[in-house]
Every structure is written in C-alpha cells, then in structure tokens.
Image (tube, rainbow, N blue to C red):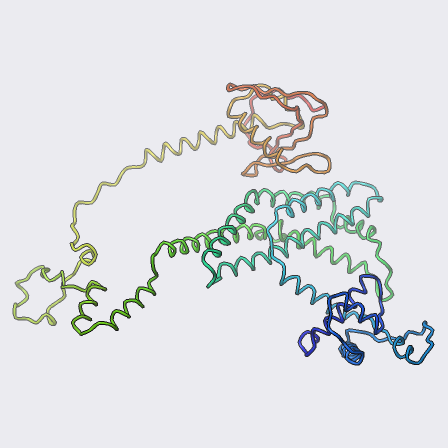
Length: 511
C-alpha cells in the first residue's frame, strides 16, 4: 500500500495522490489527465511533467491498487485525439484513500508535539454531565446525545494521543545529549514548570470525571448508546447492518474511558499513572539541571585537566621533572603513616623485613586530614518521647477541630448561605475554603458548581441565588457579606462526614 513512498520518483507519486485527495475534498471523484495536472499544480507541484511520464505514473498507481481506471462514456468526443485524452479517468480506491490518509497522518505526527491539557479533562467531565442530563429528556434529544457522545470520544482520543506524544517527547528530552547547554537548560526548566502547572488539582479533576462516569452509568450506558445510534442516522449498507459494529465501537471507547478514570478490575487509573510519570520526570529533569549548573560553575572539566596535564608530561625535560610533576599533580608525597606501630612492637623483630611483617591498620582520615581518629565517649541519646507526645496531641487537636468544623457545616439538603449565621473562626475558615473551591469550578449546564475538599471526604454543591438577597456571616474576627448562594455540604457518597452528633445549627431551607 505504501510502496509509492520508497521507489524512484516517489515525489511524483505523492503529488498525484495529493491531487486526488484535493479533488475529493471538492467532491470530485474522477479526474482525467488534464485534471490531474491542474490539481498537481494546486498542491504545489511546479516541475514540468510530460503526458507520457504522467500516464506511466498513473499506470503504476493503478497496478499497485491505489487508483482505479474507468472509461468516461458520458462525454461527446469530436476528435480521436480528444477521445484519447479525455476517455480514461482515474479515481482513488479504498486502498488509495487509506494510503493517502496514512501518509498524511504520519506527517502530522512528525510535525506535532504532545501536550498535557487540563482543559481536555474539564471538557470530558462537562460532556459526561451533559449526557447525564440528556438521558432524562424525550426521544427528540437522540441527535444531541449522539453529538455529545462523539464529542466525548473526541476529547478522550485527544487526551490519549496528546499524552502519548508528550510522554515520548519527555523521555527523549531526558535522554538528549550533545545539545547547547544554555538552550538545553532553558527547555528543561520550562518543561519542569509546565509539568508542575499540570499537576495542580490533577487528582481533583480525575475524581470529578470518575464521579461523572458513575452518574452516567446509573442512568444506563446501554440505553444511552441505543439512543445515540438512533440519533446517528446511519445509512443502509447492502452487505451487513452497520449498527452492530457502531455499537461495538462505542462500547470499546467507553471501556477506554473507564480504563483512564475508573477501571473495572480495580487497577490503578491511568490518570494516576500519568501523575506518577510527571512527578518522576520533574525529579529527573531537576537532577539534570543541577548537573548542568554544576558543570557551568567549574572553570574547566576533568577531561580538559587531564589533557593539559598530559601536555605538561610530554614537555617535561627529564625524568626527575616527571617525578616532581607526578607528585605535585597527584599528591603522592612521603608516607605519613610511617610513625604508626603495631599494638605490641616487641613481638616484631627489628630485623624483620617490612614485606614479611604483619600489616598495620591506617586510618582513612590520615590521607585526607593528616591525623587519625580520636575515640571518645559515645554521646547521650536524646529522649524524644515528650516531643512525640506533644506532636501527637497537637495532631489530635487539629483533627478534632476539623471534625467539629465539618459537623457544623454539614447540611441535610440545599440551604441558603445566610442560614449559617454566626460561626466559630475555625469553622468559618473551612466554609470559606469550600466556597472558594466551588466558585473556582466550572458550572454545569444547570449552573450548579461542585467541588470537594483536598482529602475528597466532603463535597459542596453551590448554585446561584434565586433572588438578590445578601448573606451576612459573623465571626469573632469580623463580618462577611455577599450573595446569598444556595449550598449543600455533604460527605462524598451520601453518608455523613462524621458519625458523631453535631451541635444544633439553624438551617433555612432553600427557596
């Protein structure tokens, strides 16, 4: 199928196929000899090509099964030359379309760069929420279900392809050698900043998508695919019904979505694996940057030092000069351990050769500092039991304050923000944290904003106020006024955040 890319005159064959691809974009299915030459100029082929050469190229493409040759019986020909020139027409076969698409895709991959886009994760969550809403609408929404489902699959495919491409570029970047150090350092520093920006709130976005998948599956994925099939309005095919293949393709795409965010077999989601890869890449890149900066601080490298020393040895006038140079370069002076003796010197005869005498232990510090170890009494081990107890007590107190705050803030249903009234400063700080997370999240199609705490235990749902009332919250540190939002604070999963009883706090039902 791709033989035309490796043989002689592959540029001509590629230009001919690109000409047919351009014609297909204009809904022209068959081209004559003159039409092919005109389209070749449009795609950028400027070299002169004779009729015989062009016919031979078309014949080769027909022999390879990339083009189909047909006779045009609908034309009226006035001369034999006109019949010879306009009778034969050519069109792309299925193999030709596949070959052209494969080459274009290969060129796009070579020219493209991967990316880690948090916007794609948010778009996936939005499309899942939209599917959840559309599943409850009548049959008239089948077409919207189809388009939303295809948008969801498109976002998932973009996430997978961009992630694979970026990971490949990242691994090649970490293995890159021989590049300009200044450019290399700037690229790696920018990549570290890019990865760190991507990791911000990645866990929360992955959990949001997983929760949206669960909500859609509770409505029935099979029924959703059936409605999307009706909205797809597939054309009839003589050989077989395309519905089965279409549904199987949708099922496989949904399985891929679950593999990324909510695997069936209990394995780690791929989004978490991406999190680990990004963190390891940050550590590796920072280590490489540290080595680059360390090498930049050195006046010369070890390789250059040894080469310069070799030149000095080659220029030394005599053997004595070589020995002096060797001693100065490597510090091989007189033995500083000669004063050391055996623990019981009387056992060693003075006439015994040094090569036959037992060895004497030499301190490792003697080579570096010129002195041996001095053994003293072991230092007293500090008792840290009191410090550990103080830290444990402080941790218990913090957990108690956090549990009390969640019990104070937990609601039985949607309430107005003004119903909280006066709050303890610690509880007020937790409420502000929840409100900030909710207001930074994107609203769904109904205007509802959802967010969870960092540990994922408590969830807040916030919707705009139905009127223009103002909420007033009082604490010991001051008063906060703002829009009287409708909020609902619950534990993730529908159970209470903590089983201990809450203090009685008045709640006004949402209007």
